[in-house]
Each structure stands twice: as structure tokens, then as C-alpha cells.
Image (cartoon, rainbow, N blue to C red; front, side, top):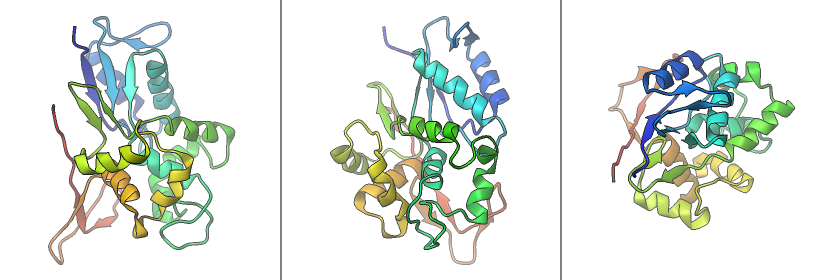
Length: 225
């Protein structure tokens, strides 16, 4: 019998949306985890954090489902951003604040609801960063491929050449953080998690959900096999 998956993207710390989604798909809350009576598995596409105010609750639910074998999960760009924000070293912005993702007003605002629950340097935060590293960049489940933004065969080959299981290592993070001088590996990771960007015609722009001015669109990709 072919395994059935329910694909659930971008929860963004909204526990009510997550539980209502699971309920609508037929999952029930058991003593240890949410579970589907027909054996279906939830496939989470990352971006578990930021925006909403229930980061800890969402992560606890997803982690428990995964631990109990009722879910699979991959990394989203917000988990990668968090790994860089919370890890000391150089950043692409050229600031000297000491973190791989600059602690600028813009970056901090995007990450603030997570920081309210998981401050920089707290033991719980450090443990959560370790869990983020357990999330693969992609999963090939045979009948379906899971990726947060873009599945591109050439970029997948670049990633797999170094990390066959799709799991980032701590040693990869500084290379990815310096995205202005991106290596082929870093570019492959960033495009996989964010999608390729397409510049808008000159003078055109829009404001994102946080009010930041954008002059390029991210293009996502879905491919069924």
C-alpha cells in the first residue's frame, strides 16, 4: 500500500491554524501525538516560526509528531534565517555585530515573535537550533518530492554532492551567510529554500507583509513525480 501524505506548508507560529488544519484532514489528538486513524503522515514544508506568537507550541507539536512517526519535516528559509541570526560570525551586511545574520532592525523585526519565546543564547534556543539542523533541505519520498521553495535538479546535485542526505552542517552556515559572495553550494541552498528571484521592471516595487519595500519577486516551484 502506498503511503499517503498530507502536505502542510508555512505554519508561522500559528497553533490554531495548525490544529484546525490537522483536524480538517482527519487527524486526532492521541495521548502522545496527533495521529491519523488511516495512517496518513503529515508532511511539513518548514517555516514553523516567526510572525505568529505560538512558536514554542507549534514546534512542540511538530517535533512530537515527527518523533512518533506521524510526520516528516523539512527546513524552510525562516529556520535557516534563525540558524544564522543566532550563530556568531560574519554576515553579508558587513556589520560588526558578530552574528551571521545581522541583528538589524529589519531582521530583528522579522524574527521578533520567536525571540520573545527563544532569546539569543538561552539553552532552549540553542537546543532548538540543533533541531533545526536535523531538518533536511529536501525529501524525495518516491512518489512525491518535498522542498520549501524550489526543486531544481542541478542545484539538488550541487547540494547532494556535499550533503547526500540534505542535512546542513554547522560548517556550512558561514558560507551560506556570506550570500553576497555566494559559492555554488550556498546559492543552491538559498534558492532551494527561498526560490529564484525575478527583478521587477524599473520603478516598480511592492511592500511585503511587514511593510518592507521589495523590488523582486520570489518564484516558487512545485514538481510532482
